[in-house]
Image (cartoon, rainbow, N blue to C red; front, side):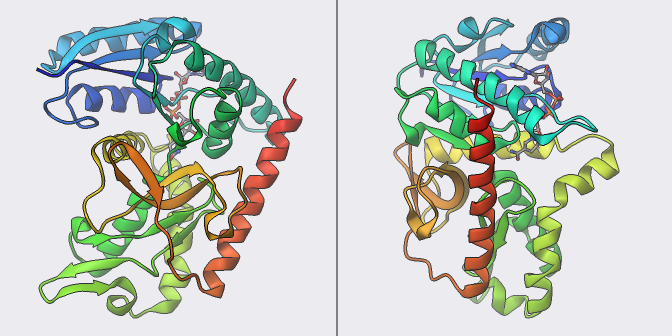
Length: 331
Ligand code: NAX
């Protein structure tokens, strides 16, 4: 039998946490034959709720779940973890300035970076979900210099999956027959969902999305804004932000990273830019990636047209501004 993998979920008493921990305990993230030990962190005001989640995990009698650590102590939470999913953060409340929210998150991610650096297992893979996800991941990277930059990523897979979903709805086809959309840039409304290289499996072979959806006005307009604004649409409908889809996307992200992407398929991940596609180096930016042997690599050589270039640059500009703001919040 395999040794258990230790998976940290921060903010585990929150909405996404509540959807995510049972998925991990069922093997959705690391595979149906991989035992796991869950480490759940939250802050003291949520300690009782966190204990409640732990009780439910016991009650669910998951065969793969070999242990549960539920704590408000960051060092204890990080001890020996192989995978860290960072969902905890300070939410933007009505009337709050961007800078105030950033200050709170910078301080959280700075201290959690140090805790991971000191206590996590070597080669721990980190996924930041909490917003601003790209910039929180960047702060985590900066303050955990001994963790390789390639091990620190942020979640844009939810946006990627939303794009697949919109194409499948539009064409009335199975979502599993659509692949290779791309989310470029920030997990925010400036992200660029790109279908120029996406394809659909048909009985006659693979066909470009651009050929099957011949409506360019839709692809260049409503499709993009629908994906960009989907988070807001969910909040409007549910009075709560996306949770089950975010949890599922976090599982997809880690699963593909650890177990690999299928041949001929790429996914979107927020990763440390090496200046591929002329995206400024030193930002955490969402790129198309393939994964093999536990490592991601950016898909190279895709032709970029002028329309795409503008959108890729605009989201990079926003990320540079967020980075500057984050640095100005460091105390
Ligand atoms: P909730 O407010 O339900 O849960 C957040 C939890 O984090 C709370 O239990 C809170 O006590 C805890 N927390 C706060 N500070 C903490 C700290 N310093 N250490 C540990 N835990 C801490 O929010 P939820 O709906 O679960 O969303 C979590 C985060 O995901 C938010 O930042 C949200 O904006 C972000 N999202 C990111 C998405 C993505 O695709 N990257 C999509 C979904 C989601 O909006």
